[in-house]
Image (cartoon, rainbow, N blue to C red; front, side, top):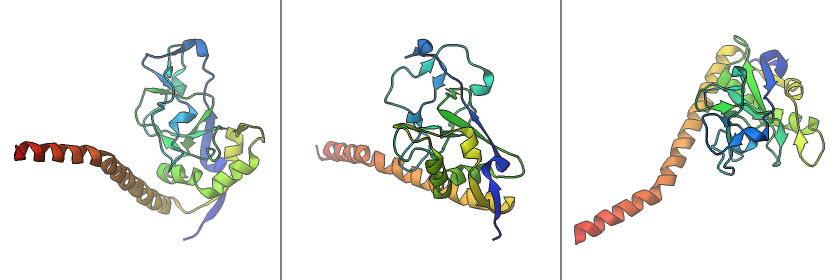
Amino acid sequence: MELKKYKLGDLVEVTRGMSLSGQFYSETGTLIRLTLGNFNMNGGGFKENTSKTDLYFTGPVKEEYILQEGDIITPLTEQSLGLLGTTAKIPESGKYIQSQDVALVKCKEGLIDPNFCYYLISSNLVRQQLSAAAQQTKIRHTSPDKIKDCTVWVPDLENQKRIGRILADIDSKITLNCQINDNLPILDRSLAAAATRLAA
């Protein structure tokens, strides 16, 4: 398979989210502000942030910062080592606001497959470049320009689609297995209760 060298900026657009004033944070509302807590450090992907209660934002928001299902996001701040380069996909349209610590990645049509892009950004190749270029402070930062400056090697679009589908299928099976494992204790208790009732 032939690979071609690119800068990520040749293949994607990367934009920073909006600054959200704390005076509009709320425990109730319709729009949820994205935080670094929405990135799953263990294997990547999106997770609901359960560490905060004031995740809703009730202030004015430009439409461009309200994300859609399937949008790819990646953090611009590294509060935990290894967070830079993590990717997640927005699970639902019209619910989440892109905050300034979160970058939105938009694929250039005809150049890169969204599934392939999702895994490419979270690959060791890109993560190592982001880590090397990050501002060396206690809490490290990257930027849309630094993400776009990463060097990558990618196959043609058809092979990207094939690879992206395979990786997405593997992720789906892992998620399903995790859900089954999470529900096993509930199933065990239900079976034990049913056995007790039958024995009575």
